[in-house]
Length: 238
Length: 90
Image (cartoon, rainbow over all chains, first blue to last red; front, side):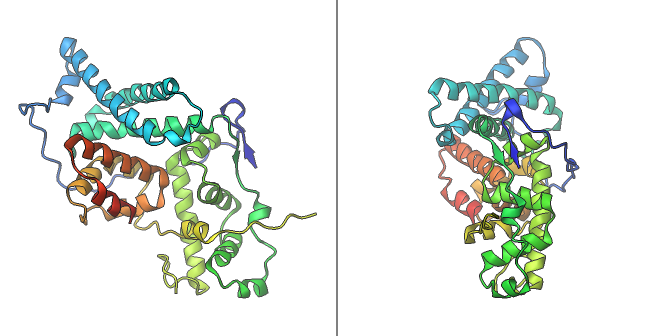
């Protein structure tokens, strides 16, 4: 199965979203001291109005642009032939999107890290996604052909001879995974399609695809443990 | 004519059976990553948030973003991120 880029995306229907699960958190990070030089009270400044708010927005955007440029340049090798102007446009777009996301979630900042660290992660996420999407915008995404990978023709005799782990994993994929799990696992882990790109093409989310991977990996480990290829379901080899 | 089945490499196989327990979703990883990055940079041998290390070994996208955050934080304070990155990469 092949999924075209954004200009001709193939609709395979939305997949179930992974519900957000609250995790227990330890004690909050010591709040930043608003009186400490260089450590502004970001939440208060951003929640204010007038010039104070405008100045906080300007400072935050500068911070996000720094983080976005850092991320884009880390992934620069994924953008061969893309000029410096376009690279900087990607960073600016990511910083703009991160600013919107942060303002929408400002009330959720609990002071468990520095505000600047919290803000950085939004810019890094947006910038990484911008790079991955740009890098794959004109590329087709292949969901590997089941028939080529499932090795369904392998019977017990061939399986008994499959002494190396790779062959055992391939056989386990044929018998322990659904077609959807197999295609997703192969696309992400063998074909190396970025998870956000695949999520875009399938109309789903990074979290939902990772959940599919989690279930697929668990099934493979359980199968390989039962067949004696792993010592435990956690992945140790004999 | 039926094409020959493709074969997994050993590296492919290891990726396919990588442990993902204790479970942590990508959404929860994002929620925790700022605190985790600060903790790992300050204390590379930390035992807090073990589920983050499992997730970051198993999710390439989240791992790239966590590494990037650690490098950026280290640059801000003039610290060496090597030990934190070594721990992150297992």
